[in-house]
Image (cartoon, rainbow, N blue to C red; front, side, top):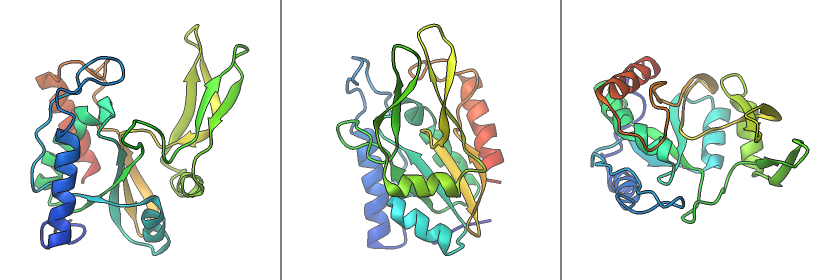
Length: 213
């Protein structure tokens, strides 16, 4: 099943796909905030990603539309680990449009989501509040989202008390209802910066094949 019009069929579509390619490839080899180099990517010029605002995604949901949406960032190492495979499989499945919501700004700062931390008594504290659109999206995607948890110094998991849109998160919405979600990340990938082996890439492909069914 092909969703949406081709993102390469007009000037706006071409600008969108070129923008995505430039954004992600511009960080190739650049050091991240931890002093490690961002993974080098080669993004297809005919990729399906179309930039969208959270408000636009909400409008699509409320209009009972059927579509795919990806939440992530060029700065996110886990996103960079799966983005090439997501494009490959989406093209194989005939998916022409995936809406892209960027969760961070150019300084790797949150522009959408709530953030929390644990204090010295392992109590959850709000660091920064997400947007109203984020709260609405949490409500609409509740059935497919996982719990937001933090890990303390002893490795214990503490629940924040709300769901979370993680990165990467690919969500399939059918007639306004969230039906499927995937991060596209192989269980064999234990570090965001590790080499992507053939086994990891095969796992990614299986995950995206199941998602883009």
